[in-house]
Image 1 (cartoon, rainbow, N blue to C red):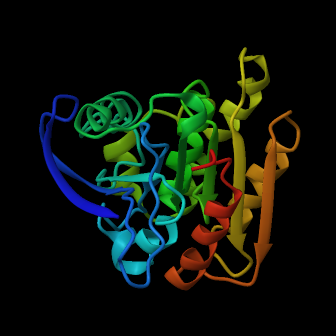
Image 2: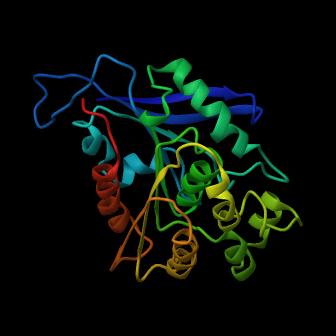
Length: 258
């Protein structure tokens, strides 16, 4: 595998930012690794971080590079700060960045496939929200999306929790419920969208403080025609849980044969 820390300028954000990228590599002599890569443009997993993290966190807390080595896929991990993957009321246009600019830039820098069937998105906590938001608002872009311990009911979460500063910077005084930033609202309209719908994978630990939010999303999603795989079990909002679950997500992804 090749590992790159890419520093670049974002027109959408109006600043320099970073993404961490893992690229497949064919190797025959590397000890302890079974690395594979096709000769075509690489299928890509966009792997999203949580509220207090950055684009380096998946490498620092899990063995994601080793987990994907034999799969022949690229992994793009962007930096979005505490934006909730949203065009902030008082901050950067992070939805525009993540949904439009980042994929285009990544494909201009690296040999990544632009085919829908080769593109996937996953994330934890805030990143789980971002992954499902991308899948539900941009179903033409992604074949599959996974949320691990996702903050999937932001309209309720921002009302209940003492995170008023984040809520004000991201959404201002505007309501969240019933908007395109509300996953439950997006679910109401998903069956009206023509074309293929992404497969979804959702998991949450039963001891996680976001467990009830995940149950709310699960109930709403099961009222749609979406293909949802749901798993739960013992686990808290921590990296031991996410390191295990990202391996489940990689096994579940509808990857092409290398």
